[in-house]
Image (cartoon, rainbow, N blue to C red; front, side):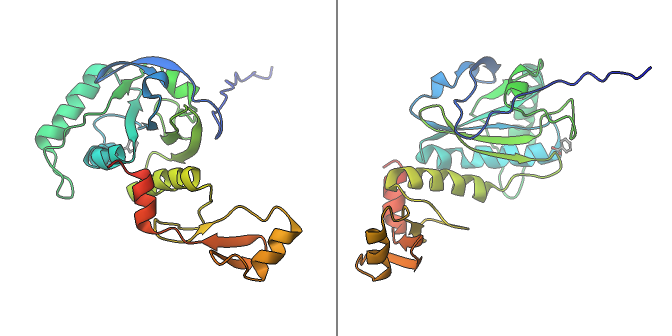
Length: 239
Ligand code: BEZ
């Protein structure tokens, strides 16, 4: 007789969805997510396991950059399916014993969620059985001050995240919101941004005839303008 395979269907949160709610124990006490973070951006990220090398390099880097993210009104929240005591022991080891790329004596001050039941990890599609059914993949959720998921990036177990890119995404999302623009390929603060498409034939014609001096057009549907690095940083970073 044919064996029937039980398939668990897990809904993955999507960009534009409200961040799924949960209450959890963390290394910084209990949190109610996302309500405790209302008004801030949050990077909610998962890692496969405590006391593993790629994760250790990432935690040191996250902790080292915590203040830089905070300057952009962004808090960090980590998660793995390990228990609280394992988390505490691992974070103590990181602080006391590990020096990585010149970063040492690093204290992880942001909360690390214990998720032995995998309840939170499953809610966020962090368990991807093709990769591992017992460990979370390296997921990164960018959640805005209204609790809306704005970007999701997944990496496999073997690949450490690119922190320049995480920071670039955060600044680009906030720049798009504050200036009502989009950001082109490889955009960084100071590069030209993309203005909303012409909404009428008249505007398209004016743009192509160079009547809007602030705008440069590659074609009628692809126009950019300048926003200086200073303007971006002034709008995004805390004083
Ligand atoms: C690591 O963080 O080094 C790691 C964790 C799980 C699987 C492979 C690598």
